Image (tube, rainbow, N blue to C red; front, side, top):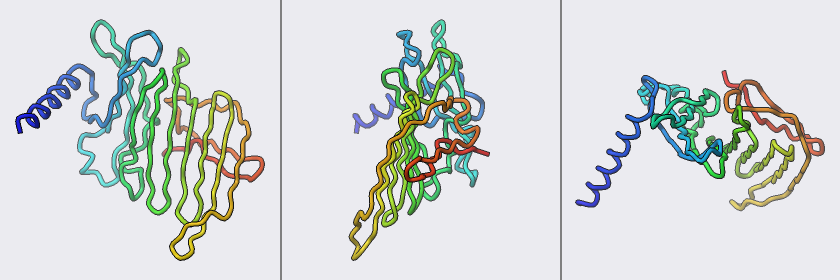
Length: 222
């Protein structure tokens, strides 16, 4: 019991220290955070995902979310970058509700993941790299589909333009799922520039040349 109380005390103390040392916008509520060196200056930045309203549970449609990146200057955190388009809203996961997955920083790359759906399911992963001015989307992965229909896997390296699409069509007989057709396609699509700030500013659709798959890299958010 003493160990449990100690862990709770450490967690609450850490959270209070964390929240007091960064400029949290009024009425915002933290949902996740990550530390890591994003501009390769040897000093970790702090990335925080926020609900833009603290009373999210009282709002049926959920609330928009904002991603804010902080830098340390003179022992204080200051807002460096921010985006209202990098995160889905708190209820944008469909029947699954909250679509937020996680924020990870590794080797200077910021990774953000979401997932959602009901019978039809989807999972998206974005990877951003700082180019000295802005955070550019350099990688996008999407996995979506429905049991007994199909599963589609998309892996797009925006830096090289290489796009890999794998699609498996399923049928269900006697409760057994069987793959009856598989389509694999690799092609290149260059010149797509998406940043942390304009992630879903406009629709970006690619048609694969062989199988004519419709691939949505960005869907315009209202």
